[in-house]
Length: 253
Image (cartoon, rainbow, N blue to C red):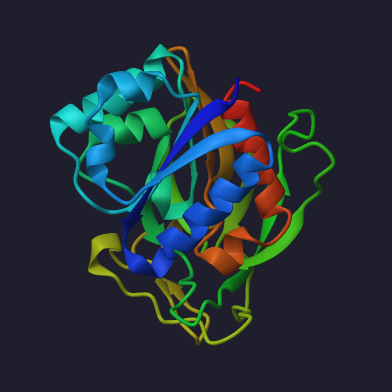
């Protein structure tokens, strides 16, 4: 009997939710999942259907859920359904819901470098913290061009990879023209083409921020990868294989 996954996609179009959702669909079907795609938040309404799944993958940046919809997802995961996602699709979704953030394990609070509407990103290194975990098996530290997330994280998560913020001293490196990122939703962490990381937090010095983690929510497993700003980013390796392994782990393969 095939395992069942539901991918709910939408929200901010800059994350290319439909394209990314179809990548997720493909990698799950390669592992013999039956996959349903939905671009409607009403897919969260059916509490019993959610509990019948093996995996829920939200890919919806921003947005608002009703209390009943949040309760449906939180309850399904607590009952044993896996939850997995990447970038803003899971940890910059439904900002007003503390229950969602608690379940997911973290919430974006600032961009360090905007990937930009031209699909270019800044360069930063991802450092592997647990090679013994099967999700990270055989993967060494690697460099990406993506959007670096500054995330508030649940101390209960199991951290599999981190990144240093700011990524290095000197000029930022981009694989194109990365947009200046000044979003009032995220305060003053501001990527500048002149390579300045400004804002009231900067005087605290460099910090390590989790990139990949797992956690448990009741009987359910939760996986998150902060990489994958868009189709181009999530398709790059090793981010894609990390994501695929994380999905399978969350689904209790």
